[in-house]
Length: 159
View 1: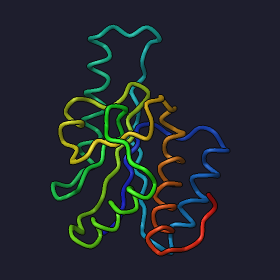
View 2: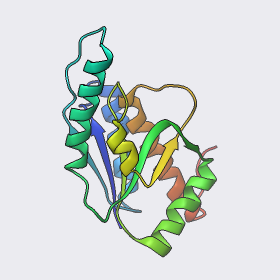
View 3: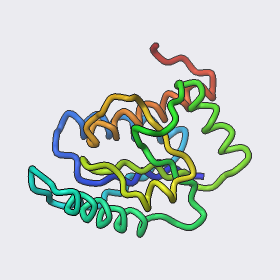
View 4: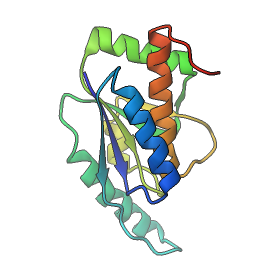
């Protein structure tokens, strides 16, 4: 099993790149994590409903092109289920033990995920009812994956 993170857009801020690279490095002793970036669609400031739908659909097609039929898809969505860090580690442990398919986490762009991507997801996961910038979400997700593996192995980690 490996973990893939499919994310819309590129990381632009050095502080985020540094944090992301740090957690990717830390995770190498636990599991292989690949980040796949798909280009975001340029959007005017005041989108019409039709423009928003078209942008999300185009980004969704790019995301779906990176997914294998056997992948277990976790879409990050504000309307998804929330889990504690311990529950997330139990999810990873159960998945590694009983399923073994590659886990694919999907982080949408600033406009969210298309309906097609949301329907393809095996699980919709929410980190909070609050909205986070999609670029920051990569760092948060990687930290929680790392924390999960520390919990699984009963290794110390700051609280």
